Amino acid sequence: MTIRDLEIFVAVAESGHMGSAAKRLYISQPTVSHAITQIEETYHVKLFERLSRKLYITEAGEEFLQYARHMLANFADMEQFLRHASEQLCIRIGASLTVGGFFLADMISQYEKENPKIRIRVYIDNSKDIVQKILDGTLDLAVIEGNVHAKDIVTREVYEDEMVLICGKQHPLALKKSVNAEDLRNIDCVLREEGSGTREIFMDFAESRGIPIVEKWVCHSSDSIINIVAAGQGVSLLSKALLLHEDCVVKLPLADTPIERSFRIIYHKDKYLSTALTRLMDALEEQFKRIRPENA
Image (tube, rainbow, N blue to C red):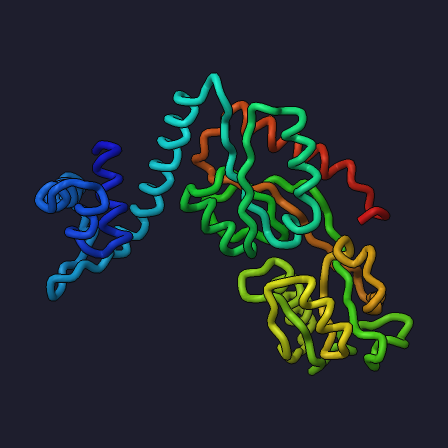
């Protein structure tokens, strides 16, 4: 099997049609059909079901697609290195919204200052989507909060982040010296979207204590959550770091054990760790170690 075979398979899987894949790759449709048939016959596997002149990828095909995308991404990295070995290298970093929005910018600036031949490209999204891009090979590494459930991901803990419950100044909980889980029973909450590490921590906290909550608002932005909570629309859970300069909400001390989560550097287990990539991970870990809890 060749790199070209992998490119053809991915194009067919993504387009759902051999003719579209052929146009995308500037080759003939019989060439596309022959490549797919050869893979299936060589490995005795069915990659697509052909029903009513349409293609439907099989379960084996879906699994193979993950491998193929990853291998093509590594091949592209290798080509980039060879073509630009004497020029600039590019590293693609992913970050969850909390990490990317508050922590990462200064760290990347410092790294680029010390490594002028390295170009960094950063993509920020919720943790679930960042993990998927690591699996697809479209990102080299990422820094996210919360747990990672994908089996092919290697994780490296770099920071312990404290979480804080917040409410508006006129909220009934605002005058309490501390709150416990029972105070949150059936209370209106302002939550991050599905796939967010912050949301997962809040939901795990409530569910582990058998406390039902009301999802009144669901947001993609921590800034939106702060504004909505400040307006008295419910309580929420955010990183203490995001609230350092916010005085429009009340931070609620927890009578229970403090809620903490880990920030993790993640990468695919089959990712080739180049010297530049390894140095970047080491630099990020070192900079996270320098963050003092009282400053976050």
